[in-house]
Image (cartoon, rainbow, N blue to C red; front, side, top):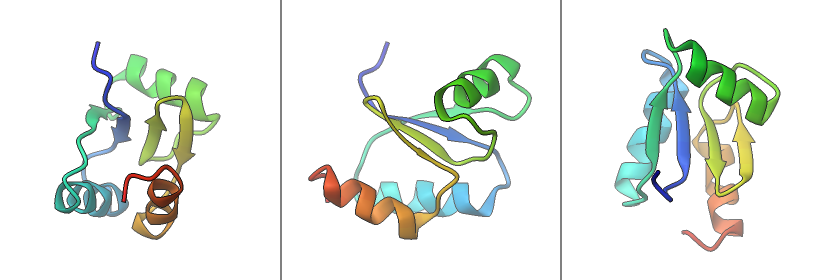
Amino acid sequence: MSDLPVLYLKPGCPWCDEVVTYLAQQKIAVRKVIVSGNRAAMQEMVDLSGQSKAPTMDWHGEVLADFGVDELRPFLKQRGVI
């Protein structure tokens, strides 16, 4: 199992695409989990975050759900990542 933060995604989701691009630009590695068409992954995300919207991130036990880059930046800054 990877110790990377987990990013739950849905293909075609514009917020997901923006977040993936931003993380790549910042050189922040994450383990991507596609929840569309994957019942187990979707249930894992819902159990973790209490909701079914993507993107959702599990940053070593800290959850950021249903977010865009504007919410991701302060989340990462608070953790000293950027």
